[in-house]
Length: 121
Length: 112
Image 1: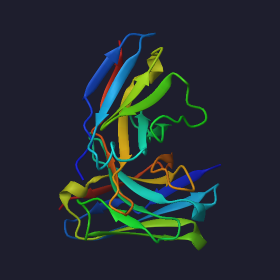
Image 2: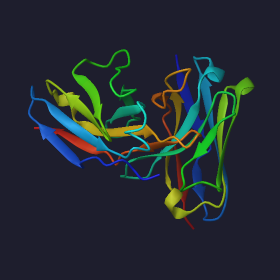
Image 3: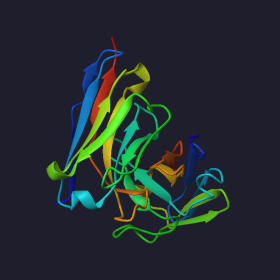
């Protein structure tokens, strides 16, 4: 079964850091670009960051650039998001998502269940 | 990286057709054929319905179709069914030589 399982979310104070993980299974992880997408409570989807299959191409939303770092370990079939200098507006459900095509379609066909990050003092 | 523009709501009766628009710029929707559409039911993860403007993943009913004209993409749902009631989001590759994706604000589709 193709599956993505996120972990690492929780309650954190403003200015602190958190590292999210996403464990992939059921597909050849290093064939696909991977992405993080977040959804604040009651709000829409927001793309956060993406990384190509070999980590050669990386992108970030302006809202997190300079504070968040995406990475992957193909040997461990895992995706990560290091989040520093967290702000209240980073509070959201964070989804890990797989690109639908080996050639990059920028469409996400597999999503995890999400991990909740709450930034509050 | 401005969000794509979608109408906040749309509605139709069972059996009818409804079209949801998604307006961007020549730097995203108009510049690439990488427009996707997602369906999200309450409390669930999004589901890919359309990719590369008009392609349907396996398992998505052919009642769902996508198109694009200039800077505006559209999702059409034909033969509306009760289970189509959900939030719909468009997204597009936004270039800049890196991985860069932008979503629309979402449209709540109500089946009357």
